[in-house]
Length: 144
Image (cartoon, rainbow, N blue to C red):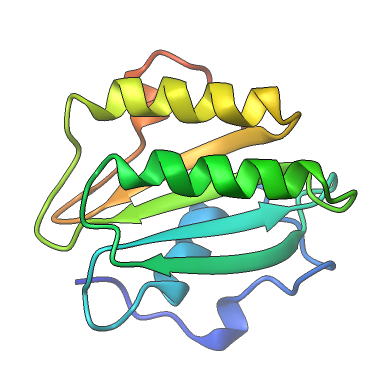
């Protein structure tokens, strides 16, 4: 389902910045469960966009579950001096982008904004890979 990547492709936490959408996607694909089950991945980044942590929330079968996951992580990140932004991925093994993801993007982005955290990207990984931000008309938040 996903391209083969090695652990040498991992950016080092607190050292290597995640500067592009491709960098973030490669990291996400390294972390996705090999069992192809519904899950939500959250990558927390510092103000230099270096990874601080990666978390996986399994069992997020309802597409709306991403909102609760992002709300929880945004609130937690707000209390941490080390977290400035999030990159999120919803893994839907047999699914894909839904029109409702446009509203989910705006709700998640607002939640992060209220916690003074930037939601850089949200990937929907399924039969294809998409970024609801792009379809929402929101400009890219990557440096390059």
